[in-house]
Length: 255
Image (cartoon, rainbow, N blue to C red):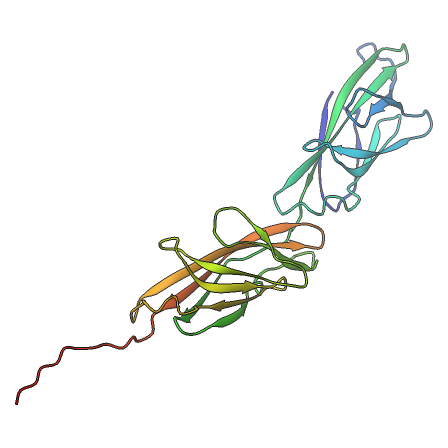
């Protein structure tokens, strides 16, 4: 019978894959062969020994983790630090097919699926800042971001236009882009972003139309990535306020 098991990206498991297998005649049976690559090519599970192979990921046919299989049906799976890219709530399946053979040479096949879940991936939090039409600001947009596993992380990409198209934030460098106004999708101001999360915003004299008590939001999305490839996104909102514009009043005089 097919079997399914679960673990997380950091935890080795050991299971008995033949617990729900049976022989109606009561003959003994063992795990005889395994197809690690799901391509119809089987290799022996040696009597009195074991076979170890890399896991096959169901989604992209890439490999990950180590599976060890014994004739008595004992299976161990080690994620082997190859699923650390999974974020919290993300999963990946590893699959293989095995053959059991009984003492009278009757055989049958079944599929094993191991679902690996991400555990406490990197977490990016939305942030908001304020300034006025004349004042540049510099902030650290990652001060609220975290990695529960304490892996290092950097700002990896940014979406200046909020259209799902991201551009790289180069390691050892920075990226500068024009700000996107939330209200009308016009542009305004200059944003400079560094991998360490430092962000500077210059209104660039493009918000001088704002009157006193008027505001305009500039928004963008960024991606952080940790040292194991886990990622998360967050939104930055910069609220620019008008600053006491000079007011001219009509005058009348008599003489």
